[in-house]
View 1 (tube, helix red, strand yellow):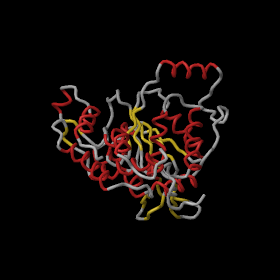
View 2 (view 1 turned 90 degrees about the vertical axis):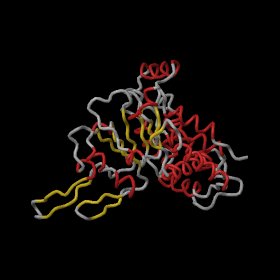
View 3 (view 1 turned 180 degrees about the horizontal axis):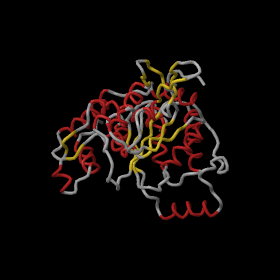
View 4 (view 1 turned 60 degrees about the vertical axis):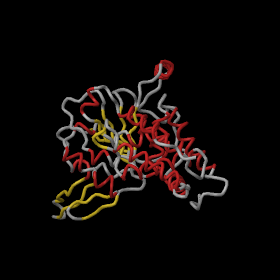
Length: 327
């Protein structure tokens, strides 16, 4: 499908329908996580990375596997542990006795969707091995840069309730994640549906048996990204985005506000959301809709605010309510 400018009547209906079909396919295996699926699609459209946070058992791994199946993309999973080394992720030079030479053996990072499971359980040295891959989309070993596949998306998970033996991600690395998506526990009816599927024989390891099939691919994502890049943003909306981010830097509850990189991330996710909504332009409501998932991991609460029970979500709500919306 040609990837030209956004037509005057708006984004391509066919492309949007194909990505909408991806959500339908994921729903065949994962119940009640529509917002997370939408967030992952936005990240793919923006070529960004995602931090997934949720208690064990809310289908984080199944969500990623099903998404890759629906998009016909390669995926690999790495269980991050305290003894994991950087070379276990990026790959390393291996001596070949037959040729008496060293050859590069690719690590699991050479994939389309890399699931970094429980990323906060591995030491900072290993966490940092992903920085070049996330920012430059390449891996440098022995002075040689090796490009990663396109698309390439890191989906890192962490458990919000179990902190013993963990290494919290530093702010510099958190800032490199485009979105932080919280996966909530399902509602009662959704949980009943999960049990009903398992009672009927659903096997989470057999996605094909669950009826999940590829409905889009890398070419569709590339065409959609080209259209997203043509979505228009007025000067007023740009100013509104900047004002929101600057307001976090002045909040008395925060010791760290949103960086300029965070402002560009909010612009990117807002454009993708506008495109998915069928509009060739961004509105302030698009910015509001993506403010929480794009900014929640880029701010840091003051210690006294935490003691008073203040949350980052409440601070962002206050900022959104205080900043004037352009008309």
